[in-house]
Structures are given as C-alpha cells and as structure tokens.
Amino acid sequence: GSGLNKLAQAAGKKYFGTATDNSELTDTAYTAILDNIVEFGQLTAANSMKWDATEPTRGTFTFSSGDQIANLAKANGQLLRGHNCVWYNQLPSWVSNGQFTAADLTTVIQNHCGTLVGHYKGQVYSWDVINEPFNDDGTWRTDVFYNTLGTSYVEIALNAARAADPNAKLYINDYNIEQTGAKATAMLNLVKSLKSSGVPIDGVGFQCHFIVGEVPTSFQSVLEQFTAAGVEVAITELDIRMPTPASQANLQQQQKDYQSVVQACMNVEGCVGITLWDFTDKYSWVPSTFSGQGAACPWDQNLVKKPAYSGIVAAL
Ligand code: G3I
Image 1 (spheres, rainbow, N blue to C red):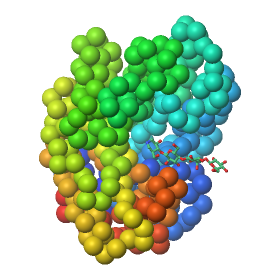
Image 2 (tube, protein in one colour; image 1 turned 135 degrees about the horizontal axis):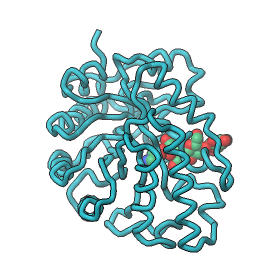
Image 3 (tube, helix red, strand yellow; image 1 turned 90 degrees about the horizontal axis):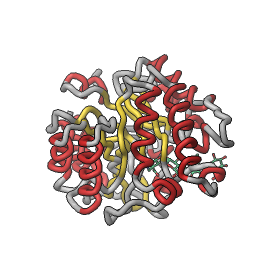
C-alpha cells in the first residue's frame, strides 16, 4: 500500500521521515514501522549525535550510538539528517562550564563540528549545524557560545561543517519561527546576513512542536519568505500535543492540524521534506516535558494509526 514517504516522494518531496532513538530499536513492533521505506524515507537521531553523546570529554569522540542510527538508515535506504553540532542544551559540562578564551572556544567548535560532520561525511543529507540560537523575542540566546564569541560562532561552525562534508546541506534549526514575529524575523535577518557575507548556509529547519488547535496561520507565508531569501526549508521535528487523556474532539482537531502543517510544506516548492519527532506516542518526548500533555504523534501508544495519519495522507 501507500505510506507517507512514498506519497511525499510521488508529490516531489525528498523525504517523509522520523526521529528515533537508540533505546527504541529493540522494540521489534516499532522497528517494523520505522524500517519501512514506504512509510519513512529519512531518520534523525533524537539524541545520539548531540555534543554530550559524541564528545563527552574534550577531544574524545564516541560515535557508536550515532553510528547505529546512521547504519540503520543506510540499511533501510533512508536519508539521514544530522542533529546537531552546536546547541546550548545537552552539552557536556566541559563545554557549558568551560572558561574559554574566544580563540580557545573557536578551536573547540571547529574541532567538534569538523570531527562530527567529517565522521558522517557522505552519509548525511542535511546537518542542523546550529540549533535554537534565538530566544522567543528574537534576541540571541546568551549561551557559552554567544557569550564568548558573539554571533561569530555561527559562521565558525558553518565553515567547519562545510569543510568537513562539502555535500551536506547546512541548516540552522529552531522552534517558534513558524509564525510571523520577532523570532522569525531574527532568523530571516541572520540568513540574509550570512548569505551576503558568503557564509555557507543552505537551509532552515522549522521544528513545528505545535499545540492542537494552534497551528500558526502564517506558516506557509513564513516558509515562502525563507525560500525567497535563497535557502531551502524543512519541517524537522513535527508533533502536535494535546491534554491527556486525548478526547475524540482533540484527535479530530489534530487530524486537521497535521493536514494543514503538511499542506503548507506541500505548497512551497523549496520545502524539501517533513520529519516527525518520533512517530508514536509510545516514545514521544512531550509527556516528560509538558506534564498533562501528550498524544502528539500520528501513531498511538500501541502503534496504531490515529486520525492524524489520515490528515497527513490527505495533504500528501
Ligand atoms: O541518557 C540518559 C539516561 O542515562 C538517564 O538514565 C535518563 C534519566 O533521566 O536520562 C537520559 O537522558 C535523557 C535523554 O533524552 C535520552 O533519553 C535526558 O534526561 C532527556 O532530557 C533527553 O531528552 C531529549 C531532549 O531533546 C533534551 O533536550 C529528548 O529525548 C529529545 O527528543 C529532545 O529533542 C529536542 C531536539 O533535540 C531539539 N528541539 C526540541 C526537541 C524536543 O525537546
């Protein structure tokens, strides 16, 4: 039959994919769906390519968990998104608590991004080189990178990634940039500034961690503003949460919401693909972060498709 990736590709998209995590891969009912290229044509490692997982102590790299996801994607014939090089969260303490000079931190970023991206050279369609650089009001997040290097950390990381894998698409990825406003404007201005300075930037990732009934109406026009600036765009971490236990009314609304989000990407030629932030409520990050909320994915706790799945199919 037809699945999400098959439909997305038939409609001209590069992939329909999902995040997954290493601890989930022993669940054979889960992997039977995950591994199905008809359903998913792309994987993202939800945790195992992050800085704390890949360089827990300075200069010592551990790729075994990341490799497990990369090798699975390869075995399944799926594309891989790399997630991520530079982010304020899930940093090992030697980075987050480090007292670095600007020169020292520059070397640290170059070595991390260069080694990480280089390790997966030729295996990754796109890398989230920079993750979540902005606060919701559009100001820069004052993490160790910004505090030490100002905005220059962005080009340091992008240049290191480009050198390490010239064929990987280099992205900046964030949330709450899906609607017009200060944060989307800040991201658009950053992209324009990087492009005018010749810094390598190929794409912007829209995470799309939405709330049922609150999908922003300006999403498609925001996507168009970015493609007009000369970058591709992608939906990188889609889920749509609701109060739990889920009501029938909210499950119906969620179906409409999934359809409208996917439709926005379908309507924009430069929107290359869509990634769920895991496909089943069984493994969603939402309930552990937002107490009393969940049911955010298109498959339920028992790996049964919800109305949301039909909403995605309708858009594809
Ligand atoms: O690995 C440890 C384990 O050893 C320990 O026993 C356990 C106890 O809490 O924690 C485990 O680490 C957890 C890790 O996921 C792996 O399961 C962390 O506590 C937990 O905080 C971490 O959550 C991840 C979260 O990023 C951290 O910010 C989620 O799985 C992951 O889905 C989520 O993904 C992020 C994207 O990277 C960026 N955008 C937002 C998105 C959702 O928060």
